[in-house]
Amino acid sequence: MNNSYDKIQLEKEHKELLYKIVEASRNLLNGRRSEFFVIRDSVNTCLQHSGLPNNEIEFYYNDLEVLNGYGMLQVTHSDQYGIVRFDIHPSGIDCYKYLKKLSNEPVNNLGKEIRNYINSPDFQKEYPQTHEKWLKAERLLWESDSIQQLTTIGHLCREAITEYIDNLVNQYNPPNAEMNKSSTKNRLKSVIDSKASDLGKTEKAFLDALYCFWESVSDLIQRQEHGAKREKEKLIWEDGRRVVFQTMVVIYEIDKALKRT
Image 1 (tube, rainbow, N blue to C red):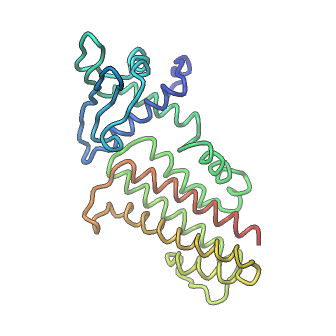
Image 2: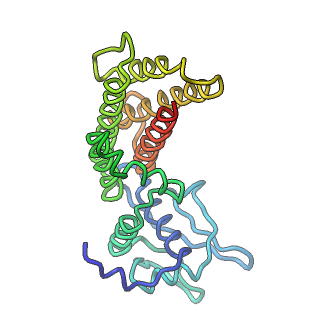
């Protein structure tokens, strides 16, 4: 993608509205398309779409006009008061991808701090396969919302945590650890238990809580990888975002906690 979007002057509020619109359009099941509706009265201006949280958000109307002025919207109906219905234009999606890659910020500043840890030379050297798999998953997240790639994201995140736990087992060499790399939950538990004597009561309780968090994230990853078939549900883009981000968070927290012991 070229850097033509460098010339576009978008304020933080404009970018946030663009993110909400693109991500809402991705959250529709089975690749369905649906227009956005602008509802205005004397007090509030709302944006309605089935992919938005609770199907509706309040927003500042002029921010929408800025996006439209840059050709990021495909307006399908307007009246004397302005835009009434629209869809996201391909150029808006391209700008979204460019801004996300430029910022390297999956969610917020805290996410940026955690991501910088995962991307640090020390982490890459210690866990090269974990970093490679997670980075591929994150890049796919911003590139497409297809079901095929959503399941691939789950597969890559599973491989990332499998490689991470294998590194921990080799590093800490806990007694009676399972040799099967796919038994990530049991292998992580053996690492945490082996460090119990080096931990205070509060730190041990925190690591035990992290283990429970890890179990939940592992279950989310498994659901993602298998397309939520067992749950008889449909994956949406938000599922992919959650899996990628939470995989990063749980690896970060466990790695930081273990390195304090």
